Image 1 (cartoon, rainbow, N blue to C red):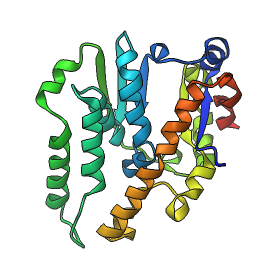
Image 2: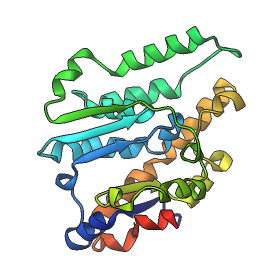
Image 3: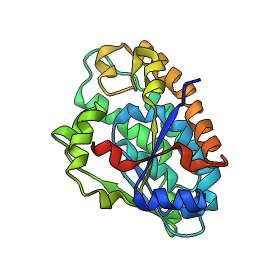
Image 4: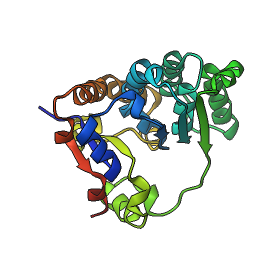
Amino acid sequence: MIAPIEIFAGQQAYRHVAEQGIQASDIRAIIGASGGPKWFVLSHLDRYLVDNWLPAIPHQIELIGSSIGAWRMAAYASAAPLAALEQLEYQYLNQRYSAQPTYKEVSDSIHRLLDSFIQPTDLNQHHLKKLHIVAARCKGLSQLEHRSLQALSFAAVALSNYSHTLMICPSRAFVESLPYGKIPDRRDFERLDNDARIRYWQTVVDRNQFIAEAFDRWVHSANPLDHVIPIETLAR
């Protein structure tokens, strides 16, 4: 059976899991990475977290994201995060464009998408859920998809910065089991027509339910540390 997820932990997080396990109240920040449709491999995990963990966090939680990660965290910060995530997923997945879309066509589509799940009243929810949006133009190694190359960039950053970090990733075996053997990405807009792209993305969304189920099994396992990998292995 394929193990759907890999779990990496910084030094302090590793020690915490070893001594106390992991629960919602341990979490002080949630970070959503950029990547556009790459999110479709994690959308059920987001559902799980906002439905099971977010309501159980009694203190202020920092929600940090860039690009699609910022949209995900905006959904987390909303008055109805589960409904917002579902709407974001539906609207992003079902984008349709002409063969040669204009800037205005794309821009109008994105504005409709944002308006579908972000409401002005959501700002009132931020007394405990603090939203932080990161805007950056990325060039170089950190822009690459291949994890071994990303690790070279990661190695240049002090590992102490990740000491309290717990990172959940789809496993390589899970990714290879997906259609085309990969996670969705922005180039799917160019490689596939609207119908083929939407079918592919929907298949990935359906299958990523296994990610959420694997995370739930890990959280409730007798020995969660058995499945945790020290985060410094990514820099080797």
